[in-house]
Length: 326
Image (cartoon, rainbow, N blue to C red; front, side, top):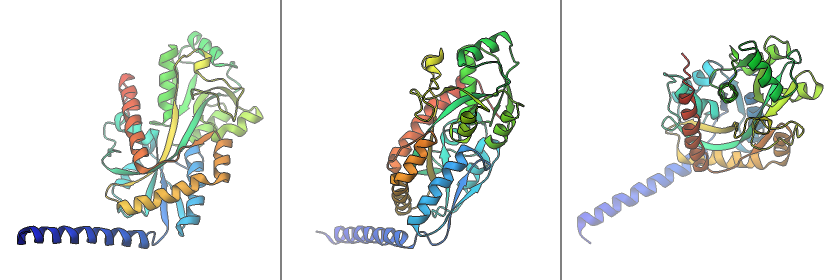
C-alpha cells in the first residue's frame, strides 16, 4: 500500500471512529431536558388528545417530561412552519399528520415548509377514522337523507371545518362526489367547531370519532357514516360512506412524530425506540382502539414512505378540487 493510500485509509478510519463517538455521545446525552411536543392546533380536539396519550407514555421511558404545547393557526401551518426553525436537537418535535404534511403544502400557496425536506420522520403513531356527524336540528338520519336534503336545498346546510384539515378536504370531496352545495364555516380549532356544532350553529362536520364519541352515545349528535373503508369497531352500527351511496369514498387520518431536518440519526432512533415502546403499551393500544384509532408502529423509513405517499394522494386531490387558502 502506498503512503497516500495508507493516509487515506487512516483518515477514513478516523472519520468513522469520530462519527461513532458522536453517535454514542448523542445517544447518551439525549434528552438533557424536557421535550416539547408541539400540536399545531388548539387544545380540545382529537389531535390534542392523541398527543397527550403519547406524551404520557414516552415521558416514562425517556426519563424526561414530554410536554404538549398547543399552537393553533392557519390549519396547522403556523406551528409547523415555526418548528422548521427550532434547533435540530430532538427537544422540540411535532405531532405531524395528514393535514399538515399531505394537504397544507398544496392548499396554502405559501405554507412555508416542505415536509419531505424540512423535517425528518420519527415514526408513525396510527390512523384515525373520521365520522360524519350532524346536529339533531338537521332533518336527516342517514347519509342518503343528507344528500337528498342538500340537493333539494342548495347551500342551506353549513359545515364547520378547520382549513387544511382532512375534515375540510373530506367534506369538499364528499360534496363533489354527491353533487351537493354546502356552506363552509371556518374555525381555528376543532374544539370551537364542535362546540358550535353541539349548539346547532353549524349543521354537520367531518371529525375524528375521538372528540365526539360521548355526544354520539348520548344522542346529542347524530353519526351518519364513517370515512374508513371498513366500519369502526367503536360505532359498528354506523355504516361507511362507501356503503351509504358514495362508492370508493375513503379518508383516514395518519398521525406521526417528526423533527426538524438535521436532527442527528441517533436521536431520531432513540425517539423512535421510545415511541415503539409507547405504542406497544397494552393500555394505550386499548385506549386508542376504544377511541376510534388503530396503532401503526414502524421505523422512521416506514413513516417517511407514508408521508410521501399521502403527499402525492392528497396534494393531487386538493389540486383537482381547485382549493386554495390565503
